[in-house]
Length: 173
Image 1: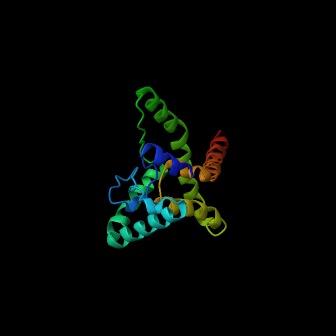
Image 2 (image 1 turned 90 degrees about the vertical axis):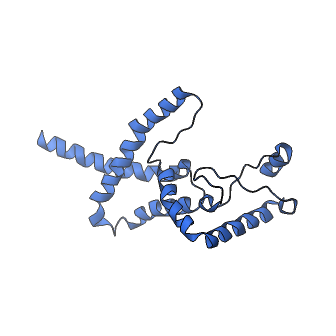
Image 3 (image 1 turned 60 degrees about the vertical axis):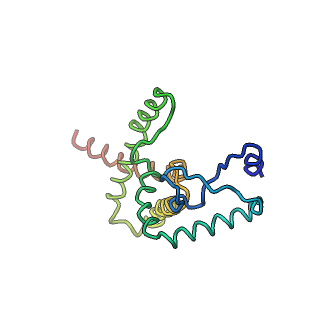
């Protein structure tokens, strides 16, 4: 497929181990994968090989694997800005966008979870969406873009909180 052709033309490996938190050379962000041996040039065989490598690393270093999960959580939810653009203006604009849009939504959504904790049984499936995406993506390859499918749910929680705040403010006025 495309990545195999790209590797054979450029000699550059572009994919990572399926579980970046167990890659022995992982810096917790982008982990280079081992070079593809000729006998694993099909996608299926390469996938099997990478899965076997990941499981072996987890078995050899379970404490390291577990210790990386909190960092993967922070990485997925962008709790700390980690933009690395060559252009400082682009980096500053990205950080401003996060400060203006993402962080307030995240904060309001967290408050929304706290406010709805008494209704947790009704909202359990809603919470499982967050839990599912978070667990899958902190165990496997982590990137902020993987949280995009749960952003509408985050916005709903933030909107609930914001509507309660506005309702309290209008009652006082």
